[in-house]
Image 1 (spheres, rainbow, N blue to C red):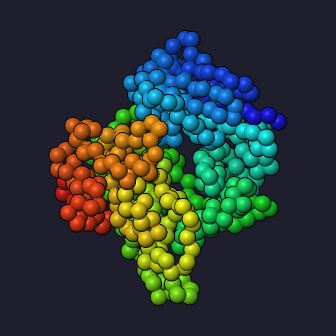
Image 2 (spheres, rainbow, N blue to C red; image 1 turned 60 degrees about the vertical axis):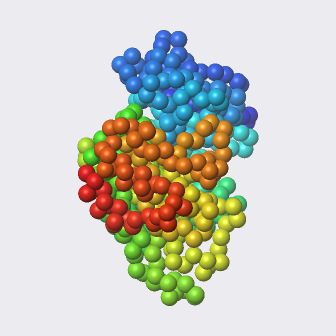
Image 3 (cartoon, rainbow, N blue to C red; image 1 turned 135 degrees about the vertical axis):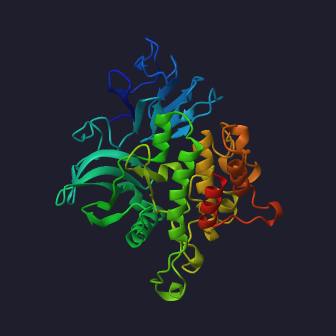
Amino acid sequence: MGETVRLEAAGTIVPARTLVFRAPAALVAGRAEDCGLRVTADDRRVSRRHCAFDIDPPAVRVRDLGSRNGTYVNGVRLAPSAARPHELADGDEVRLGGAVVGIFSTGPGTRGDTAPRTPDGRPRPAGAARIGDYTLVRELGRGAQGIVHLARHEPSGELRALKVLRPEAVLRPELVHGFLREIRTTRTVRHPRLVAFHEAGSTGTHFFLAGEYCDGGSLARRMAERAGPLTPEAAVAVTLQVLDGLEYLHNRRAPDAAGPEATVPDRLVHRDVKPQNILLTGPRTAPSVKIADFGLAKAFERAGLSGHTVTGALGGSVPFMPRSQIVNYKYAGPAVDVWAATACLYWMLTGATPRDFPDGADPVGVVLRDPVVPVLRRSSAVPGRLAALIDRVLADEARGGRTTPSARELGQALREAM
């Protein structure tokens, strides 16, 4: 089977359909009648010619065409009229207004466009209609380590989020280690602001982790659907719930390790707080927040005791990562989570990350070199006291010996600022 690119168009794109490309092609999405992916005329969040896909199997790229409300990849807004198109990867999701385009790029020996489908038409791995007691309903997302499915637990009838380790990941020890670490961590934490653990196991070649399903999706997706910043009240309400979950992680006491680690309290740092890992459930106007994905979580007080490290590993999402997490990743403590939660608040209020990441620039270099942009330069709608607090938490660590507040302290400061 040759290399292919498959675009799965849904939402306000009409008609919803799957397009398969085996040769170079170009495709424009928007409301204009001549667009290859045409969005309904009443979706006013989409420009007439909103974005363009450049397809050269197995490569696929997308470029925003200067749209008013932005093009989002996995919940992050692309720079408008960037000099170069954005490189897409297999499993990425592109959103424009209420339209969504799933990207599936395949090559020799990988899943092609004839892969089995779930009952609602979404792709799934061959032979994976059932994994143990779970029936796969549809794919929710994917990363280098695993694929997350919405799955029905047949004995109980419950819908759960089932994370399955990619078969090829077994050849990469750091991915296997991260998956097992996520299982160990998720199994032991219990808090209303953390995604609940149900079970983990294996069947055949599949290793899986079953957790709570959050029907509101991620914060990244909610923001993409909204196509605009949240009000300060709504953004702070989400952040306070995130901080509540982080306070629990940072202050746990469960000395259950063996060997030289046994005498050290099991207090955790998440290390990957970002909009994609903040999940929502409950009423849309007042959602309940759950922190997900503990693949990078680590007992910070045990740093260096296990001797385990991954050469070159950074972890986390660079736009929501403080400078200290890059220069001292192995010993990152609670402050990196508090910084990241504040960066998420900044993003909810402005639609932008705290630092600018020019197209083509090395993102790690940007974090190491460039200062955070004061929040009021992004949006004058942010109240002054709240803006001052955000800028103070996100300021470069080297300034004046400043220390990052704890999750509890920041939560209290946010309440006072409002």
